[in-house]
Image 1 (cartoon, each protein chain N blue to C red):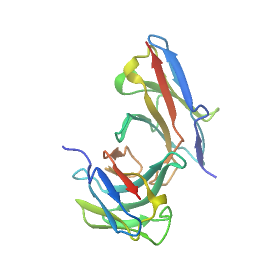
Image 2: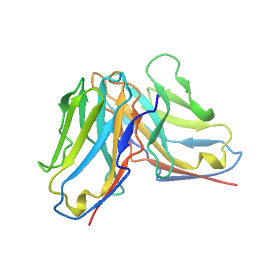
Image 3: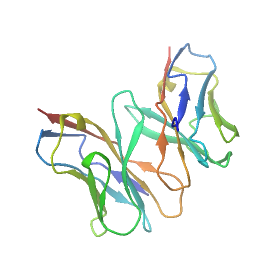
Image 4: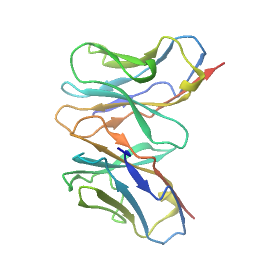
Length: 113
Length: 113
């Protein structure tokens, strides 16, 4: 079955420290990969995507993600966390030859001052 | 562009009543998606349309749920009759092509008493 896993329900990090939010996927073919962020009482906002090309993708608000085909991972990273980064983060995959996105269960990021 | 527009933002109704949720996608987007978000089940795809035609409704939970897209700028999700377990946040999203970045509306928070 095609799926996305976000193994951590919550990630805590101090402001100014680097952060990583993990995502692994299991799909056939070459997937499209996405990260979205959701702030309280808001819809999901697009952060970045990987379609093809450079394995390191840069997105909004200083976030980046690295596509690792051998490990089937697409971890979200930021060199220096801000308190305002605190939110719910979703990884999503669009399997080859489909129009749909499969979302992970989400990881709550808490950045402490 | 105003982004994806959803109405109402909040809906409180009693069990057995009909509920209609509305969505206006981003102009020019060919794909429209309806999602449901709950704490227990996360983000679920209910149905999606391409050029106003329903493509996959396998996520629609029961016959009580129906969705239409009479034209490129309007879609509805109807629940009749509503039940307390339908309480959730319902999101509409649109994309230019599929698969591609989906842009989400602010959501409708439905409470069925």
